Image (tube, rainbow, N blue to C red; front, side, top):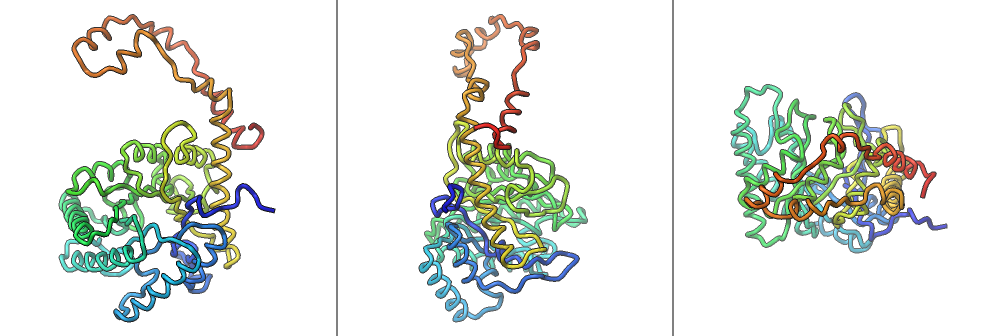
Length: 393
């Protein structure tokens, strides 16, 4: 029997080839799953109701492949996409795996490394455009340091700025229509990564030559591992009109980058996030892909991988259902009802002027009474918990 929480194509759920294709290797153990076939991954995701699949360049075309081999691989992959109705909404470049990138890619002190990174990215952008991607993500996994004396961080940021300006210009020259999304992370695999949070990225974007075509791709784990609120991060990006893409997973605070199944940790935080993305709290709804940048436990075989993928999508839909119920709850609505003061409403909505400033100075406000007033947030939070636990709504 069909469930309302079963994923559908219109939900815009996507996975990376590197996510469902993760082989379960970690720093202390060898892979536990076989090398995946990209075509098989696409077909299985399509069967599960996913909308699309995303990829790094190296996920599909092996490094060093000849032009003829590359074209054959891409041609066959496009046929599989066409046969399954799957899309490639986002593409990216692996600028962290090759040993040449051990001290950065675009920020490396060595111009040969920087040039190699640009060569690789240009080819990958061409691939993404050929596959129909609309978003191109940049995660600077090696753009950082352990020995901070190795370079002036200002030089690193200038190199990164130049690279992105150059690549934006290339996309415009080619007429690709791609938008860039920058992905922040505080640390790992470097001791410190430049531009460690989404807030850092949002400011950096304002310094770019083509800032209008650059946004952010925040990831749950990357903000939570630093102890930050991911809903606040996403809200800031949405308010700036810069949420171009989003990476969904789960993370325990203070741990290594875990990339756990979405919603498997911090269900309250996940509910508040989905509430934002779905716009049930009254703000605008995020209309882009819901991308799951996570992977199955190392304990799993292939069957477990598909349970992981189904779990990510079902949990998102369950949380969306809970969010709608919470925001439609009459008691919640009463607690969140917008407050008005006929003396202050026109002043606080007005622009900056000498008249408004003088009028504000003259308003009598009983600050002590405001301090004594309870806000009902204990009750509000309890209502959220009860909706989350399924005993209300």
